[in-house]
Amino acid sequence: MADRRESAGAGEAARRGTGEGAGAARVVLAVIATQQLLMAYDSTAMNVAVSDIVTDLDTTLTGVQSAISLYALVMAALMITGSKLGSRVGHLRMFTLGATLYGCGALVTALSPGLPVMLLGWSLLEGIGAALVFPAILSIATLAFTGAARTRALTLVGAAAGVGAALGPLLGGVITRYLSWRVSFLLETVVTAIAVVLISRHRTPPRKPSGSRPSTSWAPFCRRWASD
Image (tube, rainbow, N blue to C red; front, top):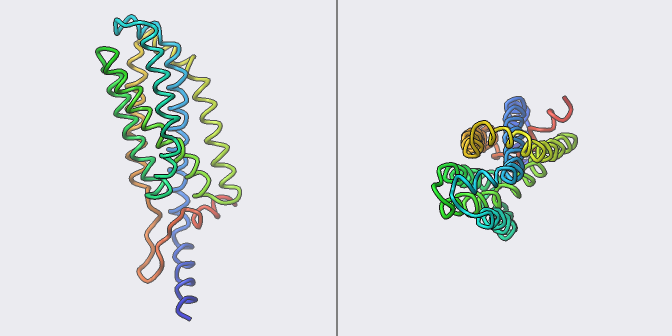
């Protein structure tokens, strides 16, 4: 009888929180999709700015290409670790930590006076951040949504990656030519900072009245969204 009453109370609380929860879920989805776009943009925009970076940092083409390769290596090497950490401590927490590291790395890269500092910002900090963020994005989109909402979430995340990769050579080239390659990294810092703030504000589902079990997933609040 106690379990039934508790389940009924949780169900009633979920119905009351559906509107708020669905709105928060939309914010979370928009944030992770934007971060996915940004990181895909970063990878391709870097390639079109290589010659300007070589000149600006007074370094060699080999040095800049090494930084790009090291970024990919760090990200690939730590991706599985990032996924396991997300399973242990929470994917939203890992997203927040990874995005924070990524934003700090973008800022360090934008302000780098030479190749060594760029290696620290771009290759290490951004590489570690990306290794935490990428698995968190997929896990959030998969675990926090159900039914049609999950399909929408995964489609949006995949489309964001494609758009970001396509924007890199175009928008990145324009910014590099008419402003500076550093501006791209400064914009990444700003967008990532906004993402961290928003995800921190919506990191937990809406609170339920006392006496009911706390929700551990966004799923109960996304079913209505799926049918909207």
